[in-house]
Image 1 (cartoon, helix red, strand yellow):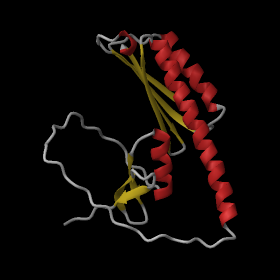
Image 2 (cartoon, helix red, strand yellow):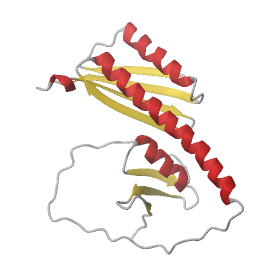
Image 3 (cartoon, one colour):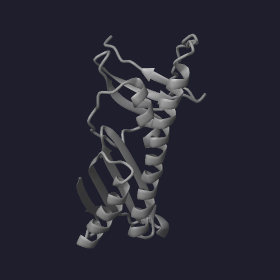
Image 4 (cartoon, helix red, strand yellow):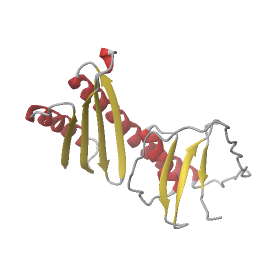
Length: 188
């Protein structure tokens, strides 16, 4: 397991690196396939003292990505709270894996009834905003179901992935009614 700790406006001591490594080693008991861990610690000069120190921790585990971010007045508390969030994500992930397997076995004897697919119309707003941030990331090949699972683990409302069956990049998103949608781009 490769642990990288970076600090922005924070001095990262050997003790802090060891503390994070020790905490992540405990998580490895529950999720064996952890390969890389990246911890970004930062100090923000804000008026609110409770949001001064931010810890963002990202874990790569067997094709899954787990990420948590917490801000508090103490850097160690931020690290602990972010790792607690990741531990909860691991519990949900393992629970969904087990629950998905059990439901698949139950549904094996029944026929699936499919509902008609409705297209969703996206309305544009008149106001134009500015781009505040650009982010680059690696697009992993996965099925739509795996993309939904990954989106739920991260707690996001959308997730970009490479769909190998269509050989294109797709976006899965959570709809207001609790279901999911897939955006499939095509050149015009």
